[in-house]
Amino acid sequence: MKPNLKIFDGLKHQEFVSLRPLIDETKAQVYIETYGCQMNVNDSEVVLSILQDAGYSLCDSIEKADLILVNTCSIRDNAEQRIHGRLDVFRIEKQKRPALIIGVIGCMAERMKEDLFNNRVVDIVAGPDAYRDLPRLVAAAKTGGKQINTILSHEETYADINPVRMDRNGVSAYISIMRGCNNVCSYCIVPYTRGAERSREPKSIIREAELLVANGYKEINLLGQNVDSYLWVNPDDPTDTVNFARLLEMVALIDPSVRVRFSTSHPKDMGNGVLYTMAMYGNICPHIHLPVQSGSSPVLERMNRKYTRESYLERVAMIRKIMPDCAITTDVIVGFCGETQQDYELTLSLFEEVRYDGAYMFYYSERPGTKASRSFKDDVSLEVKTERLNGIIALQNGISLENNRKCIGKEYEVLIEGTSKRCEEELVGRTPQNKTCVFPAKGHKIGEYVRVKVLSCTSATLLSEIV
Image (cartoon, rainbow, N blue to C red; front, top):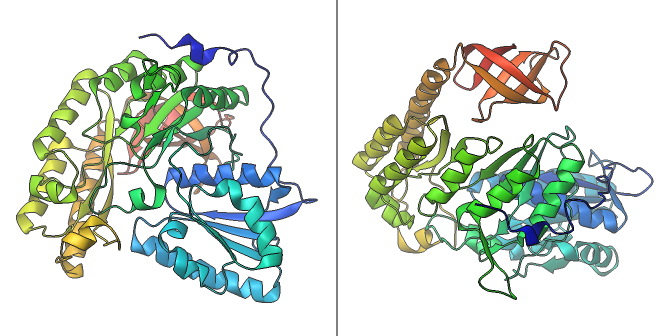
C-alpha cells in the first residue's frame, strides 16, 4: 500500500510557521473550560485559534477573563449537571463584572439551546459547527444582548484551521479527521448534537500533522466518532478516494519517530485493512479502543449497535491474530433498558473472555430525544444499575491487575509525557500499548523516548525504572 503522492505535493518541503503563543496579557482575555471527550479538547483548540485571530489571548482564571467559554458534553446527565454548577460559579463573577461575556458552546449548547439561551448568566450559545461565528457572536453580545447559533453543517467545518495547542507539554496532540456520526445508537445523543458524518480532506490532515511534527510533537492522535468509517471522496474525481487504513499509513509515513494513535473504532466497521496497516508500521501504536457496550446480543440489538456478541468476539480474535501484542480497551454500559440479570452476566463473561487492558464503565443514563428514550422504558432501577456497575468495575480492576502483572520484568519504549503527580522526581509516560509507566527521572525530560523495565504494578500503572 503506497500513499497518494498527490496528497503530499507541496507539503513535505513547505516552510512551517511556529505554533502561536497561548498567553499575551496585552490582549483581550478568554478563559476556556472543556468537558467531555478528546473531540471536545480538540474543538477548544480550534476555538482558541479562531479567537486569537479575533484579538483574544488565553488566560488561566475566570477572574482575568473578558470572555468565558464552557465547551460542553451531553453524553451523560451528570456531565450536564456539572456544567450547570459551573454556571452558578460564573454568575457570581458576572455580578462583580457585568461586562463579562459568558458563552456555552458544544454538544450541550446544541441539545439545550432554548434553556441555555434563557439562562440569565449565559450571553452566547453556540453549537459544535458554529465556532467560526464566535467573534461575531461575542461582538454582538457586547452591544446587542444574547446571541445564538446552533446550525449544524453538512460539510467539514474547520479543515483549514490550525488548532492552537492548549496542552503545554508539547508532546501529544489531537487531529480531528471527521465530524458527526451516522450510526444512531439508540442511547446516544451525539448524532443529534454533532450532526451527520463527514470526512475531512486528507490533504488538510497531513498538513496539520506535518506542522505538529515540525514543531516537535512526538505523538499524533487521530480522532473521530467512528474513525473506521472515514472515507474522503475527491469531488473532482470520484475514483480518487482515501479510507481510514490509507490515511493511517499517510500519517505514519510523515516521520517514523512520531507515534500515531487513533480513536474511536466501531466493531462493525473496523476492517482487516486497518489491522494490517497497524502491523506494518512500527510507529502506529498497537492499541485499539473497541467499545462493546454490552455482552448480550439482544441488548446490542436494542442499542442499535449493528453487531452481535459473536461478531464482536470474532473481531477481537482477528486483532490478536494479526497483532498479538495489541492492547484492547473498551466502553460498556450496564443497566440499559430491558437488561436482565442474564444479559448482565453475559457482559461479565465477555469481559472474562476478552481480558481487556482497560475499560470506561458506566450505568445507563437516559438522554432526552434519543431513540431509546422514545422507544424503551428505562426499567432497571438505580440500585440495580449501581450494583451492576460496581460488579463490572471490580471484575475489570482484577483483570487489569492480572494483565499488568504479566508485564513485570519486560522492557518497553516509553514516551515521557509529564511529571508524576505524587513525586516531582518521577516521570510519567505510556508504552505503545497505552499503559502508563511511572519511573525515576534520572535527568530525562518530557518529550524524550526512554526504555524502561517494569518492576511492579497496580491495576492502573506499571512501576518501572529506566534501563
